Amino acid sequence: MKTKEEREAKALQKLEEEFWETDIRENIHSYHKRDTDEAKFVYALDKLIPEYNIYLTDGSLYKDFNISREELVKHLHKTYVYKPLQPFADAIIQEAYEHDEWFNF
Image (cartoon, rainbow, N blue to C red):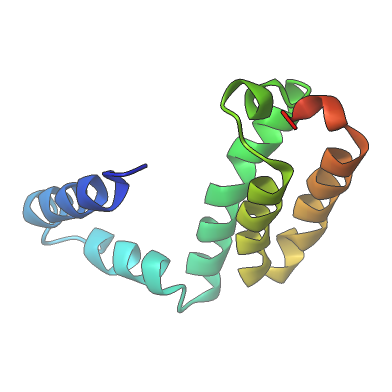
C-alpha cells in the first residue's frame, strides 16, 4: 500500500503513452474524478467486487490480512458514490457485524 499511488501514477503514464489516441485517458481521469454516472458506477464496483468475493469465502481474507471491520466499513462506504450499489455494500457490512470470526480482535 505504501507505493500504491506511485505505481498507479506510473501505470497511468504508460497507458496514456500507449493509448493516447483513444478515450482511455479521459475514462481514467473521469474514474478518478467520479464526474459521470458511469465513472461512479465503475469506481463503486471496483471497491465492491473484491469485498463480495471475500464475503463468498466466509471473510477469511480479512483475518488473514489483518483487516479490521472498521477498515472494511470505511472501504465499502466509498461505494456510496453510486447509490444503486449501496444496498450491496450495506449487506456486506451487516454480515461483517454478524461474523466476529472474520476479524482479529
